[in-house]
Amino acid sequence: MRISHLGAPVAVAGSALAVACGSGGTTASTSHEADASSPPTVLAAASLTKVFPQIEASAKYTFGGSGALETDIEQGAPADVFAAASPKQPAQLYAKGLVDKPLEFATNTLVLIVPSDNPAHISSVSDITKPGVKLVICNATVPCGDYARTAFKNLGITAAAMKNVVSQTTDVTQTVAEVALGQADAGFVYITDAKAAAGKVKVIHLPAKAKPGAKDFIAVVKSGSHQAAAKAFVATVLSPAGQAKLEAAGFGKP
Image (cartoon, rainbow, N blue to C red; front, side, top):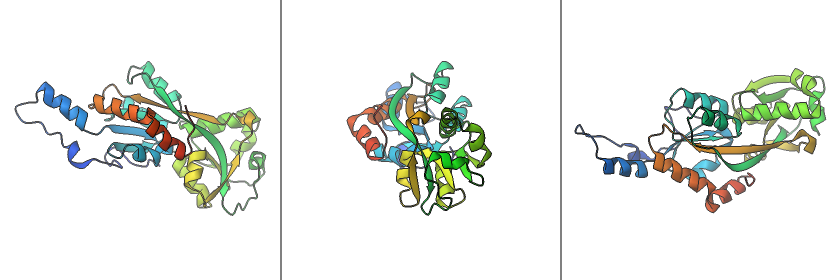
């Protein structure tokens, strides 16, 4: 489930988007001014849905699975900035020359969540391997799904855990929703998403040997039409004010 599609951004800065070009063309100075004043188009991981608009309200956002957004950029979708919940997708785009060098801007933590009433009585990660437990995880192309599978491998429970998977979602927001609605007994999401769903789900932390740490990376898209605005957005995310907003949302320091 994509939070928004490219044709329907979450936050649009109205008149600033209408960078109309006259029939006679545009001067270099006018282009520069338009680039500086127009909001950037930001493609970002679903886990950033709540916090990014708090950091920069005027940007145009599309939130979804990092893997799907990577594909969008590869296929030429309009984008000025790419922010992913993993170093993997930005690194792949960087290797193809599609983005500037990615920068780590936050860390996150993978956790296990259960519905607030916890009908399956799950108290630890080992309980997800019990027969009959309904587990939901993100699909393998999404960082939260990749992290979950890595945790299974590190804990030596891959076969038993995957046997109980009843749903594989397209992004972490959908995983939270399925658990909160009681459509699954447990799911793997980031602590930031669990925090945002407080009261609807309960959190069970993973043991250190599961290596539940996650890293978020951001990069300017080279084909973007608003390079100055894109670089300004990245600078804002990395600024003390941006980092404070991320920390308040539950993210860790890079």
